[in-house]
Image (cartoon, rainbow over all chains, first blue to last red; front, top):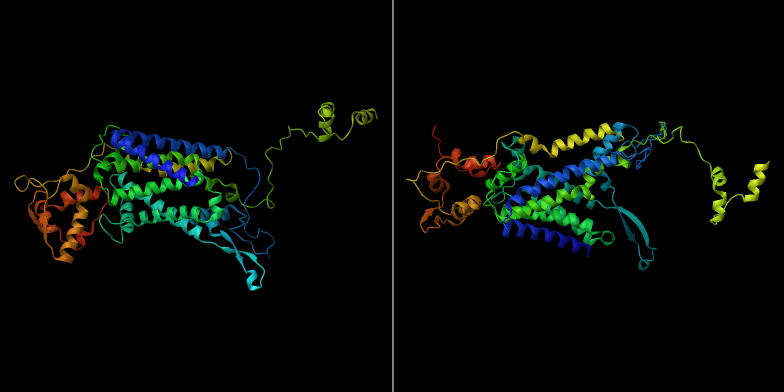
Length: 348
Length: 128
C-alpha cells in the first residue's frame, strides 16, 4: 500500500503538469515560475536545514568505531575505520562520500545447515555488496545526468561538458545517440525500488517517504528519456526557456514545446522543492554526521563539556528532597527520609 | 553555531556548484536561438518534411536513410509533398543547406551535440 500511495502521488503530479501546461496552456507558469519557486525553496530550505544542524551541540566525540582504536604502538591502528586525527577523518569521510564505504559493509543473515542433513540450523553473516553496487550505479549516473543538463543552462557550453557528452554517447547507439548515464540512472533507481519490493525485511520497514522519492526520480528519468528518444521536441526552443530560467529573464515567450517537457520540469521542480524536507537531505547530512566526521580522540585529548559552567551550581538529590519533601509525600512519591527523620537530622 | 566556519565554507562551496548556471549567466544579454542560414527562395521553398517535424526528427530521419541505403539499397524517399528525393546527406540535404558551418553547426554547437555524420561524410567546402 505504501508503494501504491507514492505511485499515485507521482501520477497525480504528472496529471497536474499535463492538464496545467497542456490543456490549460499555462506554459509560463510551468516553464518558469514553478521552477523558480522550487529552486528558491530548495536553496533556502537546504541552507536552513544545515544551519539548524550546525546549531545542535555535539559536545563529545561519538564516531562509530569500525576498527581498532589508536592504542599502543604494537597494536595495529585501523586508521580509516577508527580515525584519530583530522587527516584520517578526512580520508574516512572522502571514502564514505565518494565510495559509500559503509554500504560496502552491508551484511546479510543467512541460514545454513538443516535438520535433514543432521546438522543444526545455524545463522551466519555474509557480505551483501548488491546494495552498495546499486547505490553507486544510481548516484554516479544521477550526477552525470545532472551535470550533463548544464549544456542547456550555459552558453557558450564549456568544453568540459563537450567531453562529458562525448564520453556519455561513446557507444553511438541510435540517433539521438544513447546516453549511457540515462540508461544507468533508470536501471539504478529500478534496482533500488526492486530491493524494497523483493527483500521482505526491507519491505516491512518501507514507508511512503521511501517509495515516493524513488518513484519521483523514476518519473523524472523516464520523462526525460521519453522526451529525448521518442516524444521529441525542438531542443533549441527548450534551451531558450532554460536559459531564461537561469538568467532570471521572465520576458521569454514559450511556444512550440511538447507537453512532455513540462511534465519533466514539473517533476524535477517537485523533487528539488521536496529534497530539503525529506530523506534525500542525506546529500547534506552525510557531511554533518557526527558519527562519521569526528576523530575518535576521546582518550587522547581532554574534551571539556561546554555545559560545565561554573555558575551552574550542583543540586544534589538530598537537597532536592529537602526542598520538596512535604509535597512529595502529599503526592505519594517515595522519599528517602520521612518528615520525622528529616526533623531529627536537622535538630542534631 | 558549532564549527560555524567550516560549515559556512561548505555551504558556500555547495551554493557555488548548484548555482553555477546562475553565476555563469549573470549579466549576460537574453539568450536567442542562433539564426540559421536558409537556402535562397530561388533554390527551394520548402524542406522535404515540415519544419517543425524536421527540427525534432531530422537525426532519426538521417539514421533511417543510412540504414535504408546501406543495408537495403533503397535510395528513394517520398517527401511530404509527394515528390521524390535521393536519400543522401550530401546530394540532397547539403544541396540546399550548402553550409555546414552556417546551418548544421549553429544549433549543434549551442546544444553541445556532435553528430558523427562527418566521421564518414565530407562536409561541403565552405565559401570563404
